[in-house]
Length: 244
Length: 164
Image (cartoon, rainbow over all chains, first blue to last red; front, top):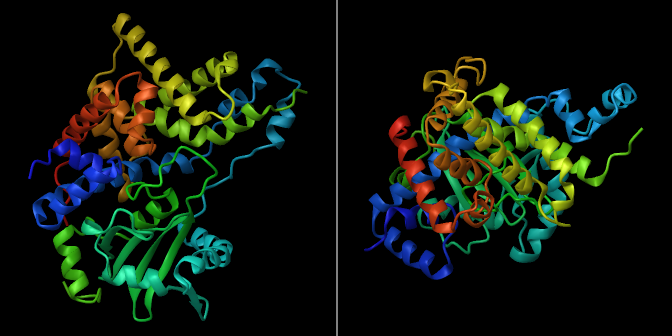
């Protein structure tokens, strides 16, 4: 199969046209080594984004806020207003708070929106715990990141194990991305983040998870993300802890 | 007092991402924030060049990238280029745990040649498409692709395979 590394890389980055993508996916299906290289490309991208995620959370220096608002043009007159009006959040929310907040805000709209496509809601709550259900639960159970349809509505990102041995998986929906971890009750939602940022420059590719989700991954991952083979073994074991 | 224009507001909102991009480009926090400040001043001085509806972030990435190339050139002329060992030093307080890995990754990125580093920063960190990165860096998409491939290969070499 004549798939060079640049093509494989472009595939991992979501940059291929449909025809080439189909050709790569056909090759990936029968070649675990190729799939591992795709996983390595994606893992490196995740690692890079994770390493710089902290910068987004830092408070922005006042001199930069002033420069962005041309306040150096009017020294003195505007020192007070510059202190009063700050658009940035004071601190970045920790992912658990953020997860709860996002879930609260998004669950209704998301459930409604996706219900139209799949009839059953993708996320339901039981005793205050948000669980994947319907098509999302099915995708989490059965879909492997290494060989999923590129056009899939639900795209699985990275799978990994936590320090206590549970499996977690990230997923991307048309307007949101999140992290779920397998527990006795099912796939429990850890964080859900909107990716519909009003025409920003973020790509909605599987390889670019929102910072809140990446942060959640970073907080709970033990070791490296599962490669294609480990992911397949985890799936075969029903994503139960200790089976690998 | 002056009223904030829409551009002012969009620049303020873009600041966290601009700082992140500048950090990836320069390899240290002080240079990064100096670069963002310079970039903001340049941007506001030529705000007429921003097309209506164009993404402020992408426009600013181009301004920051060009300003950094100018700065690196003038440092080179003054014979004051940083030694590679210095690049990682002031990135952050080297705390324990996940910070260590983040620092290792940032240090590895700082060792790449400028053209590979900017491709990696725009596509892999900022999540831009190859086409957007090509427009910002003024090269064909194929050039971005090969710079990205070489940058990735170098990073994988520097960081080693990720294992348990």
